[in-house]
Amino acid sequence: MALTQRLELRQGQSLVMTPQLQQAIKLLQMSNLEVQQFVEQELERNPLLERDDGTASREEQTPETPAPSETPLTLSESAPAADAAAALDTDYENVYAEDSACDRAEPSGSEMAPSSFAEMKGGSSRSDSDDALSLEATLTRGVNLHEHLAAQLTVACTDARDRLIGAYLIDAIDEAGYLTVDLTAAAQHLAVPVAVVENVLKAIQTFDPTGAGARTLGECLALQLKERNRLDPAMQALLDNLNLLAKRDVQGLLRLTQVSSEDLADMIAEIKQLNPKPGLKFGCEPIQPVVPDVYVRDTKGGGFHVELNSDTLPRVLVNSRYYSTVTGKDKDAKTYLTDCLNNANWLVRSLDQRARTILKVASEIVRQQDGFFVSGVTHLRPLNLRAIAEAISMHESTVSRVTANKYIATPRGTFELKYFFTSAIQSAEGGEAHSAEAVRHHIRDLIDNEASGAILSDDRIVEILRKTGIDIARRTVAKYREAMRIPSSVERRRLKQGMNLSDGVAAP
Image (tube, rainbow, N blue to C red; front, top):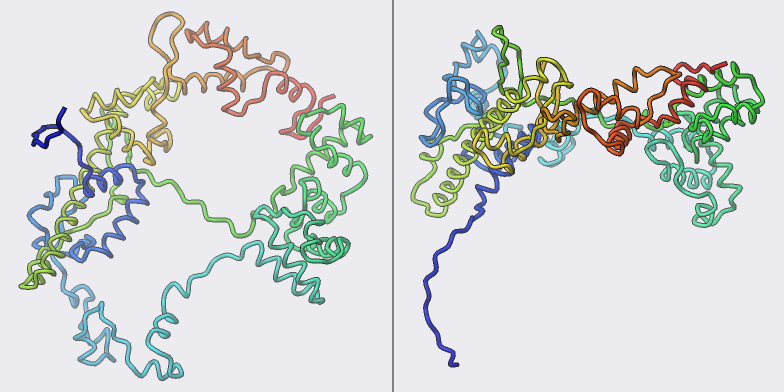
């Protein structure tokens, strides 16, 4: 068989992931905070993009920019720029009376620092003065645990060797306040006797916060009780057997501590007042509140009104006037600005499409889960991505990206959009299937309302659920119970009959 060269023409279909398409897909699954950060980066990178703060003229928008709708999603109508003197209700000279004419002629974004300012600071350079006056240099942060302990170390230890050992041990303390290094290994690393390291550790354990530098939970609690002068032999025996306390073995604790039931209850109540992680008081990151992307409100007619949170939608404009002014005969500059213009227009359209898609998906979720918004979690229906995708004529992957990292504020609380997608559990009577989330809520209610003398086992819970029309297996009940961190029937019986830890009172 001879090998020959020939030309063939084949036709096929393929999906080309252009950078713009990849950007649009990324924007769909971003949270509102991530989108804002992405837009800020694009504003710095693209000279044709401007933040829409309501002062830009409408002529600066390109014809490709989508016209704002009656309820704008990503764009808003720009008002004409107001006169500066009219806005301030005074003349310019009354506000900046000491500025010279050349200073007033400079644009607001230009550098206007006088050259003599560097000489006033001792002949420092221009960059040094800028760094000294930067806003970031004035920001403050909280003192972390290591800095707090190191400041006390300089006062408590005067010997240079002890300070070096203390600095090593402080670096080995985690954010919760516990020492994570073995003293023998630390002594070998520092080439000092173990007794010296132990003495420095004892000094560190006297620092604030009390309990920092402990190696175990029992030692941490013992340091705090010692400061309160409450570390007696009975309390020490209780701290040495915290595993029995976790198992709620009251009889074993009574036998080891040699105290009465009332005294044991008081000791447990005192332990509950201690801080098991004292280091978390320092250097903790502030909790970021959840900002909803969609709001759901009741209407007078009995329905629901779904709207986007306009505060989380970045508003950007494309400055076509600047593009027409800058583009000239320079071919390279024109090519660069043309790419910037195309990217800017694509970003504006992508943000607009993202907002409309989120609104469409959220509206369909509210329509299919109306029972939840009316009657609560017990009326939550089984729902999957395919049902929403078919209802709004989109692909499942698009719905999955839209519902990722998005939150909806409802009269019943703020939930993630993924919360409304739950698996189905068949009905025992052949009726409509039940939502897994509703079944978990039902199991929690049964356990919360059980009597101390009639603890419900998993088999008993299965029987009760089947009487209400829910066909569920015992292993499924156990899986749901463990996922909700509910102890087994044996542990709950021991808790309610032996000792009520929530009140710190022992049963007779």
